[in-house]
Image (cartoon, rainbow, N blue to C red; front, side):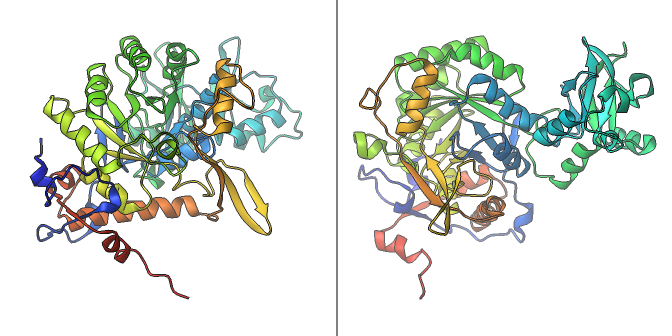
Length: 491
């Protein structure tokens, strides 16, 4: 556990601080000559991120499409809870079935499915092969290459597929396929998909060239033990959280994010306990909180990761509406200290909100966070879900907080609560539009954050995030000191 005097070079007068109140001090000579070798990964249980960024579970930012691109870049997206459960599962499958060398549960169609419908499935899931089965009996595999030979969009899968007896396959009783062996088999067979059959000749998965190519193209991508892209799913305190968790876990979700605006309440903690007791192995995140007592209680109930932040988000109105919410830097620091003091060193922290620039993420990690969760940064990008609007010749996208009036009304309807235009809904989130940031803006932001965070570590002579936390020291700055460090406006 770090002492305050080892982290801050100024006296503690009781003032709570946020990112703009402090700066990081250069404390030692750097021996790092290239930022390319700096390790930005974080690992907890079976999850390893190569970039410590979570995409926020917001309806105008996050869906399966956004999540898959974030995972390709090393982070993880959280599919929001304002979907009906089947739609949330659909969004998760968009990620899990995309760009993976090994597909554990390939999509299946019947032999009488026509080419028109097959094309739609290929496009919808961005995949190149489907299993053909009737009454759970494998008939064959059909690929994009197969349907190119179709005479009509009404041709059936049975006329175009590679039949079971003619399949090239790898024999294995599990999905722990060595990628090099799989690649050699693909090249030798001159096909783009290999069936994975067990000793009883039952299909248990597919090995795909497309997924293997993506794996090589995006070496920094965040993947599970089967090579699938990682994805998280959010759920709230209402709408059968235990049943919902069961369904989400069955789809291979990598993390459950159990959250509400104010997590430190007895009902939330009781449900948290039930989730952990029913699903002892799932990676479980809980929040939101901003005080040490809540952190300790959550850790005792089995939370692996804590979501820290009451009101610092770009679309959050909690602080101005209620008066509650601790400045984010102090909230993270105090919770990290409390966890370490009580022996919960392995419990991770998400800095949820307040990250307006890449330097804020560096400060959050330096003060004890392990990840940053961002929504407003991604709002308005080409991958964000918000509706694109043309207003007086300028392009904008919708951006709403999940506690905004529209989202609260939607959540209440999904939960079966009755309300009207006057109550009982009280919104704590903004509902707005943001300028469209342009094509390619998502990848530009990710590259910026990746490069900036690596640069921060080099300034601190740190090869990884753990070293960065151990070595960094904060100084306190005035408002003018912060203004001095921002780019000038010319013209």
